[in-house]
Image (cartoon, rainbow, N blue to C red; front, side):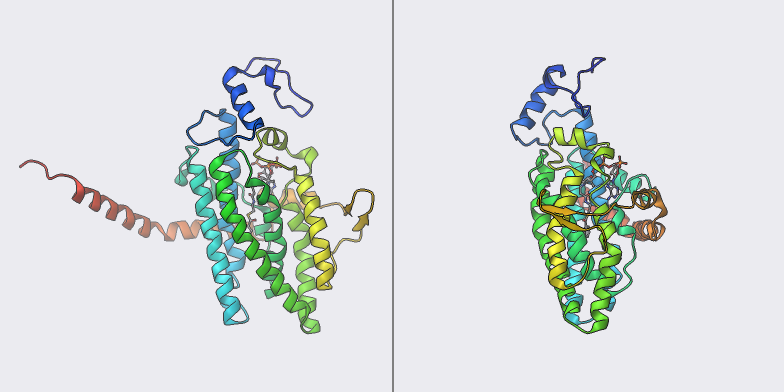
Length: 332
Ligand code: BYC
């Protein structure tokens, strides 16, 4: 058990010399960049933090299929349709790897999905915004997948083995996704005046929600200090957000469209962009279920689960039949 009056650093993380031997040995492995594997001893809070983050990540991948799925039947060409179909299918695969990674920590898929369907588990705020035009599919690939990569590349080196390995494949696929999004934006920006205006409108609507994907500012991020000490997170929310802005603004310049932020300017001293205040009230509203599409997204997932009951039942019945056939016949 933890002792009272534990010595912590300024961010509230327990110091090594205050830890019990098991926990200290664990932290020393983390400090030495060792990977933690499912059967290794781990503090209960580490396990819980990972289940929370990995399952939220898995839910985000699955719910993330919905805004883009909306455009599969309306993609402008057969080629765009095939590419979008493959991308949306990739997201289902990402959800699968991530649910499997969460299962290695002792959570069951049913209980994780139950939390999502009951509205208790979060998924990324970004997927509660509507996809109104084809340009939104470009903006999602460019900005949303771009932000996802910025966040997930470091996760390939996180301390939990199954999560870090899942991220390697996910990041490869996300890179392709980002390119397809940027390609859509390039085509639109090189097109008619109306097409370029559509691209600008999509950037206007997706820019700020994309910055919110990185989570609350560091000062308000309740999990960051401990998650960084455990090397679940290798960079803070604000650090990754800054990297994303610095990477993305020149891409908007190349496209010839304007980031919707009057306060955006290059800061020579810090070697990065200064940018305007994010509307954190909007972020919290979306997290609490008050975004434009929260009800629709959750409703679609619950319906998919209910509609799939016959299929799950069929699989179980088939598995039971096979298992029964494999059992030695009872002596008569
Ligand atoms: N949306 O202490 P903090 C994708 C929550 S998939 C909703 O900073 P943490 C893609 C946070 O969960 C994108 N909730 O938390 C898919 C916490 O709430 P709880 C998903 C958010 O965990 C398909 C509270 O706010 N990526 O890109 O240290 C197609 C306090 O925050 C958000 C991942 O999941 C948000 N934006 O840091 C295309 C990556 N931000 O749990 C693309 C893995 C914060 O205490 N996750 N919250 O109730 C992470 O890296 C971290 O969990 C976060 C948050 C940076 C997101």
